[in-house]
Image 1 (cartoon, rainbow, N blue to C red):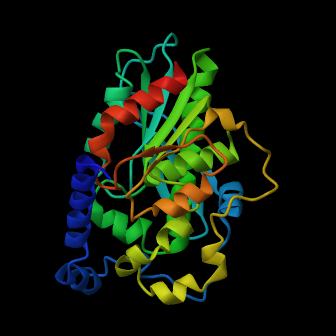
Image 2: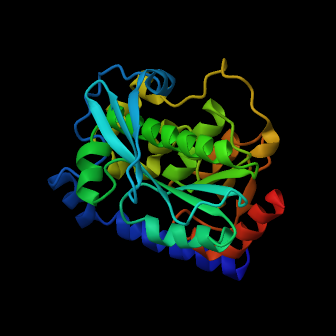
Length: 303
């Protein structure tokens, strides 16, 4: 490990240590901010494939407003937004970006994506997950139980599909899907379930959200972690079904962090072992330190 990597690892550890501070953990428990705090550990949760195929949704387009994917599955519901950040130009490629979990992750990640895909050269679509206007709504309506969580991800996956089809209906230029963390999950899920974009770049993530959540480093943030981990329906919810049509492997290029303890580097590497993945010398929250390497890798694949 070189000096730069040592600094990155130390920075990642300090950030993570701060998040795992005992007082913060008590605060999360007191105010019910843990993930899945309303989840019944014994509930049989439907597979993501069932949710995606059964979900009811409509597309709402209003002048000068973000498009909305209004979805409903059982008692879960929400509105996922699609925003085009420039005047659409059929002579430009399309880029569809999805942020990470939480209302505060958008700005830094979006700036990194704009460095790779400047608006003057690309049609830039941004997907905002349902209930991600403020953090309180993320907690109350997105991560409070597993079906809400999975339905919200399904809504985002359908929003990506809507943006892909919009671009392809108007342009012969390629369309690229990318996202960080939660957005990387959505990117991967769209690839496996639809696969009709030209390029996919899931960043510091992989699609099996259950594997990511039930990583021992995340235990402090999940209510009834040990009980939920034993629920087979939750553990298998995001497993990619074997009966899905095989997608070309030369259109997806995962990017993972060598020192990522949140997503878990070993699990991510195992999931993507048959794909052309890139390992960055970074952790989960320090990925910004590798922005140049990230940019160079992506551009090398689409040029």
